[in-house]
Amino acid sequence: MKRAIAALRWMVLIVAIMVLNAPVIITLITSFKSDAEIVSNASLLVEAPTLVNYVHIFAMSDRFDILHFLWNSVVEASLGTAFALALSLPAAYGIVRFRVGLHWLFPQVVNQRAIPLIIFAIPLYLMYQATGLLDTKLGMAIIVCWVNLPLVLVLLVNAVRDVPIEMDEAARIDGASSWTIVRLVILPLVRQTIASAAVLAFVYAWNEFLFSLILTTRAAVPVTVGASFFFSASGGGVQWGVAAAVMMLSTLPPLLLGLFAYRHIGRSMTSGAIKG
Image (tube, rainbow, N blue to C red; front, side, top):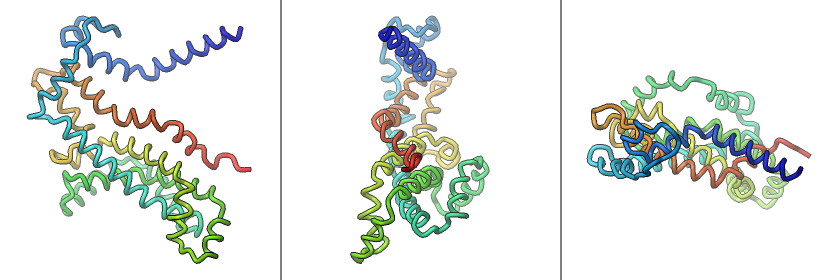
């Protein structure tokens, strides 16, 4: 009976994985099919696996450089994540320990996630045009930092709240300033949450499309926008094999990062949920 229940659980798990990840699985399989097989074979089985679609991507580097797009995404997502963490940690400490902005600033920042971002498109474009930040990696890093601030701040506020205030008081008796406490006391104790917030912020920054489409044209185009260039690159309609291969390459870095850090993400999201 126990073996039957265990087998049933595995079957349910496998079916759930297949259903929830069906778009990714279908895209992966399509990327290994030739154009002829994509037309003639609509099943999930690949009759003649080929890497021609991936080779074709790099053969088009004179027009659409996938490595350039990937590099832009890495730089912009990394900088944006670093900016969000650098702003959120001292802000979280001030909110929790000194109640600065606890009842007005903190709710406003958090509720920003509920506002449709499209309404900021025109003002941001005009601001970036006036300041010379259009089509720059720094400009996109600032955008993804702003988009990720609510999430990162909520995680760090919960983490700092779990640190006993007695540790701050003991450090102050030894003459430590607030900045020293943040750097030497708070930071080591919340590093797991910081790592989880960094992973989530990086993934969200990597997937940013709306502002990337509006605020970049060539030099700072990330892979989310650059991938769309390959859909009809030959002028003969969508090349589904090439498009699938580009999508798989563009999702590989955040996918691997998420799989590597999913346990830490789960722990940080439930931090503070249960208090003794």
